[in-house]
Amino acid sequence: MKEQVLHHEGTVEALNGIRLSGCEGIRVGDVLYHRIRLRERDIHTGRALLGRFFSKLLRDLFFADEVFDRAGDGDTLFCFARYYLFRKGLRENFERVVSLSDHHVYLHPGKKRFTLSRLKHLGKLFTWTREMKAAPGMTLPQRLYYAGYLFECEARYAAMKAYERKAGLRFNRMLVLNDVQYLDSWFVQHFNREGRDTVTLQHGVYCATLDVWTYTGSHSRTLLANSRFTVDEAKIIGFDHEMKVVGLFTFIHNQPEPRELPAAIGTVGAFLDDDNLLRDNFRMIEVLRDFCASRKKKLKVRMHPTSHAERYEQFRQDPCVEFVPREQPLFDFFREIDVAVVRNTTVLLEATQFGLPVYIIRNEEQLYDVYQNEPALKFGTTEEFAALVERPAEEIRKDAEAAREIYGCPGDIAENYRRAFAELGIR
Image 1: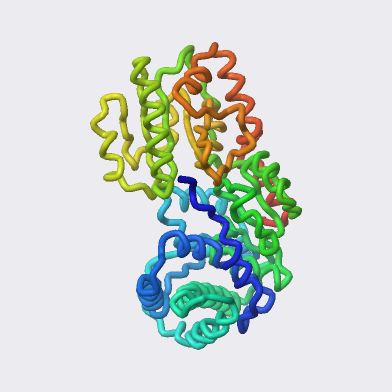
Image 2: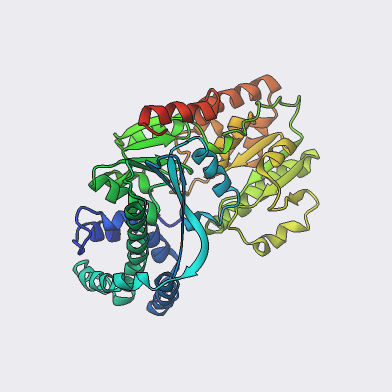
């Protein structure tokens, strides 16, 4: 069975094609892209959608959590949304970026507090629900579900505008983490419409042909790319916004020297995707386990932050397979392995910057392939993996160096960001 295609073009474009009150110039379908993807993949009943809507509405209507930390004259807004908190360490890494600026306001989630101020936006929610009837085939539960997320966007943007008025300032620009998520997209599109500068710090990697890169009409005016790979992928689909290669923010003030490779591969590290690709995760473990078991090697498995441990019980009793604790720092894990194996995860970029050789397991049926243009690093079977890692150490080292050129970033990462900030007017 092939994977489900993740590009929900019909619903996205239908919502982009309608006009919602107070959203003139905003591509609503782009804002809701990931919510549409989630609904069409996982939430299939009207009852489930209504349950999500009411629980979210009660949370967003009566509770606020925005914190505005100001430094200097605060002319740049740095935004970090609550939905990124599920990834341990992501907030800390984003704050490495914020620390490079002396004049900013850092908007981030804090302790929830009761509020009645958001009640004034409630009428818009029901107006948008009614106006979404213009999108063909959309049920009332679907419209409420989507309008609920737009309500959160409106409430949080209004809180930001209120802060500007109270502080007596106007942000000249904004930097967000991934402008394809709904709050980031809403903020970015409004800033673009208002003639302010917008900058996106790219965290992940995207499949150019099937994923969010196709929605270029609503992106930030500048992309701080994590690698040359990102730039090449963006060019495939005609992304023509300004791009600056600065490297992964993970390595700001935290950049290791590329490690020396051992004479022979002794420990293989497997990096799983999320559980939506469970069958592929199982297959990765099986292929690598068969390699390691027949050659007395070690296999260490690192689960995705959203994975459920109980789904992998069938492998936990295998003496050749070791699941590492979730709380183990990524860099510590890198130091324990000699080669990394991935499929679609961003870890590939971090591992190559660290100096590890990285290989990509291939699935002939997969439609969603982030690394579709890298056949030299791919394998599909135990025998093909053996052919890659049992070559002379010098050849493997050359693989690691070539991958670092594409997926890593030269120079001091913190200095790369400072230079880009200076060019963008971020002080």
